[in-house]
Length: 110
Image 1: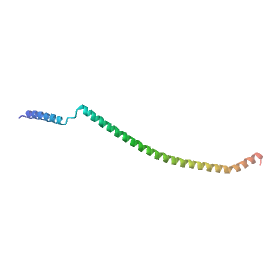
Image 2: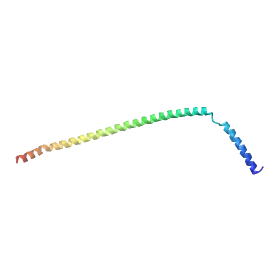
Image 3: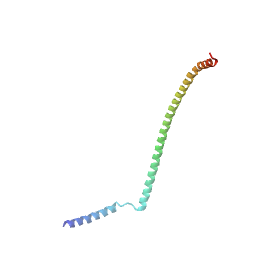
Image 4: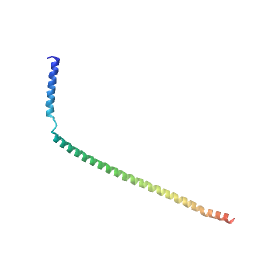
């Protein structure tokens, strides 16, 4: 057989084998395929919802922990500011009698 003849026989045999294999592994009818796709889509949707809910719960838990940490820090800082304010008020109040006497002496001419 010539090269052309061998090629033609190979092409015909390859096509026949391809058609036979295609018939063996052909997909199910369209109705069944659509139903299978619907079921799989529903399963994927449910899994996505479950995963989203889980992620939302994790994020909420982390936010609660972080909020508690922030509140603890804010309370501590507020306490420090109040303590500093009291200290300044006490220091300034200690100077009031002297300032009063000095002002009184100046007004009365002493």
